[in-house]
Amino acid sequence: MTIKNKPELLAPAGNLEKLKTALAHGADAVYCGLPDFSLRTRVNDFSLEDIKEGIVYAHALGKKVYITLNIIARNNHLAKLKSHVRKLKTLKPDAIFIADPGVLEIVKAIWPGARLSLSTQANCTNIASARFWAKQGFKRLILSRELGIKEIAAIKAGLKNTEIEVFVHGALCSSYSGRCFLSDYFSGRSANLGDCAQPCRWEYEIKPYGHEKSLIVGEDTHGTYFLNSKDLCLLERLPEIVHAGVNALKIEGRAKSVYYLANVVGAYRRALDLIAAGKAKAVLRKELSFLKSELTEKLNQRGYTEGFMFTREDNLQNYEGNFPDSPWEFCGQVISSLKQGKHFILLVKVHNTLLADDELEIIAPAYRVNQIKAAAMRDAETGDEIYEAHGGGGNSHILITSAKNWPAYSVLRRRLRKTSS
Image (tube, rainbow, N blue to C red; front, side, top):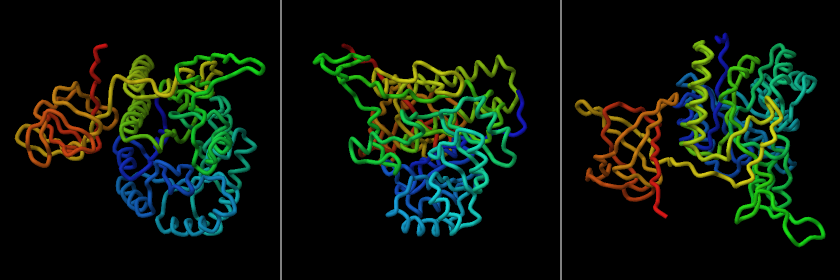
């Protein structure tokens, strides 16, 4: 299968480091925003200065930065929002994500030339809705996760000059594309303002009316997780999605780690490149299956589902808990590499714990995975040889000797040791 127009790979960025990591591992564009307006008020460290630096950095690489203004705004947001839009205009991001018609009017009044993308929060699910939003000036529509592939293809075919973007990986909401009121009800934190407490991930105990005994639904020692959706993973379905004419493939996860980004962005980058290269179906099927198995085994996730895109699955929920433990753990990120004789000295920022005799893998851009040894691990500050290092500790930066050169933003993981019971 060869394709004329390769879809854009769009990745999340919760801070400047994550932005650079996503771009390094193959994202064509990233989306980010300030906490107040971007549906991510927590685990979001962006300032306007960070966004400015990120845009300059991305543009130097020939890549793009999209800004999220996709809250469902209230009156008290509007004055501050207008000021924010004026500042954003000077930074020249590549597009703005909007869900609220009022926010749309403000952006169009202050910044008439802004390129507009319709957020999935607007719940665009049909061709009539798509044409309406296109008439309002949107150049790209991010369709609802609830749509099937035939519906997506039909919407794309019914539009002339409007791009289509779909989610292919990440967390799923138990409500309709994020329009949830459980968080506000239980904790006073509004999901529609980016402050979701994720009550769908909480443990629950179900008691039938009139009976004291609980109704057990896949219950563990903490309770049951009957609202807890599995994570979306459409790696093995990318050929069909590309064939439907989708213009952009979106990964969810602005709150996730650089390790998540390196793995997921790298896997999807590699998959898209294989599709674009016209690999034989059997070869492509094998590679996509391998990439999905890697993400399944080596990332903490809630179990994977294909969601609503291809068939109506009966097992969308994970009733057993939140994150199944992976036998692998993120342990480091390459900061820089220096050639020394026939070898390379890697400066590594340690995350979690790293032991000199650990079984390690390094993940470079486009999901190039190799084994690596840390046998002669040294403290980056003192140069002393050490046996173990800990993230956040005194020796959180170390030096590792490698036979190969590994670029900055490559990440390391270690296989966890089995503990005797």
